[in-house]
Image 1 (tube, rainbow over the protein chains, first blue to last red):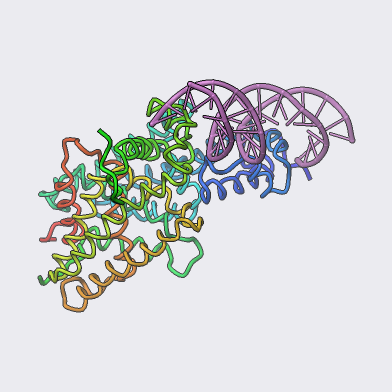
Image 2: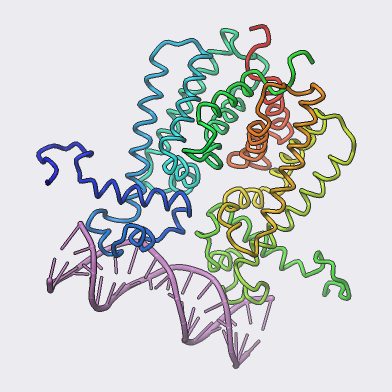
Length: 205
Length: 205
DNA sequence: GTCTATAAAGTGATAGAC
DNA sequence: GTCTATCACTTTATAGAC
């Protein structure tokens, strides 16, 4: 009944570890990193706080592991999209849709990232967050700039501000979107893309 | 040299109080509410932590006072705009522009509100945040619904999702906008309104 | 209005028994 | 893998001197 050994596959590192990480992620997202104590996590898991340290070095390690898992997955998908040779509008739509799907599939991790990245980057351990932020910027700005050049997007916009606008709108929905609710993430993504690409104003005005 | 007495005007309650509140607001916005200790605030003010309690009941009181001051001002302006009888597009533009100006003028308070409102509303003391949230929603939804009815805004959008989109885009810029920087808040507001109303896509496509 | 001094509770983390 | 027990430190807040 012990999980098979002799492999480094992290998915094998006992279900308990993943279980505890999931409980921690939920609490971190709900209450904030600082406001969630190791005792809170242990309580929610039905064990004592000291027992958590059999699985993890520190509270910080848990955060690290949660964010790395989520970001590895997300950027894998981003790189695939950009490499697939779609036109600019389709590429942008795919990037936005993938981001919304991440909000749905990794809600806690996205919430933690959005709320805490500002404070985490000051910590050397989380230097990779800055690197990924740079890659994110290059990916999205590249699509925008190519789209302005080929006439897909308006030439009179400030590309830098448009980038921030897109980045922010793609992620801020994590604040109110609830996975499993009546509004699906695909509906939200389509609506948001429709507004951001074609505008809220009636076309005949 | 003592400030004039015999009035309840809170602006008269000694410059020191406002000064301390401003120091606290800056730290709260930078580091987060929970991560900012009363010692941090006292240090920044050049006094000892115990001395802070001569001016304020608690750390929570400081937060309360910071948010109330900001929100009273903001909603005063919102109410004026809606009462002034502009058409729907102009009303929406004025609401958005006023919000961006608040990011510029009350940067710390906006940042604190955005980061902490989710956790604060659970506290009875901050019940007014929920009430103002309802008023905000009615104000903005009213403009959107009127605009859809009179043909200013597209009829094929989900008004509820459009409201969330507008609300989020109006406030999320506090995360990167820095007052006194090279980009003025008016530039940002105009760009964002242009994207949200007319869209990012080229009109001839 | 600020300082000295300190209480009372909470926090992350460790060592070793079971 | 979890518990017992506990350490070292931080945090909010108070009481009274100056």
